[in-house]
Length: 162
Ligand SMILES: [Zn+2]
Image (cartoon, rainbow, N blue to C red; front, side, top):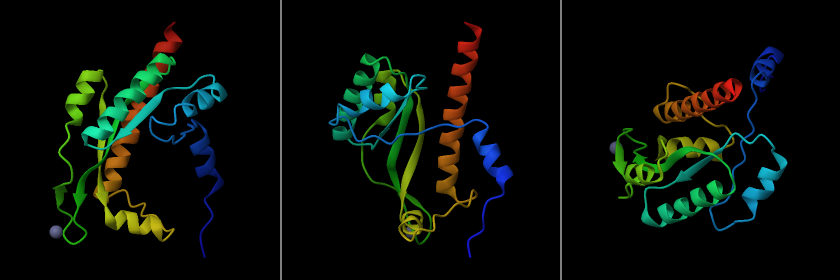
């Protein structure tokens, strides 16, 4: 039987809540303004890409679009950066794009890279997501979350000084 989280865990999580909305790629141009309209103090957008030229075109459009809307883009996350071998855990290349160059051109930080990981994907498919913080791919997510938190904290400090 599944355990129920202690209510203190829940309160701790709610002390500094963040709402994340996963939006479709740039083509669905009506979605960001609709969402933005519901969130008056929208902290910013995080753009997820894959290291391929096609994705990089869409990302550049999305970033331009967000900036035109006055939405701050916090940074870029590269998904499917590599392939983690389910047998030995070794990372191998999947695509040959250059996300660093794109980030530099857009003047945005690269918040992190997430490998394609069948071991992790399988646990999600089974409805029992792997949540072990010591697992290397999970660690990547934690690092990205930490960087986003730092950016949001920094933004809040700046706002309080005004
Ligand atoms: Zn292997």
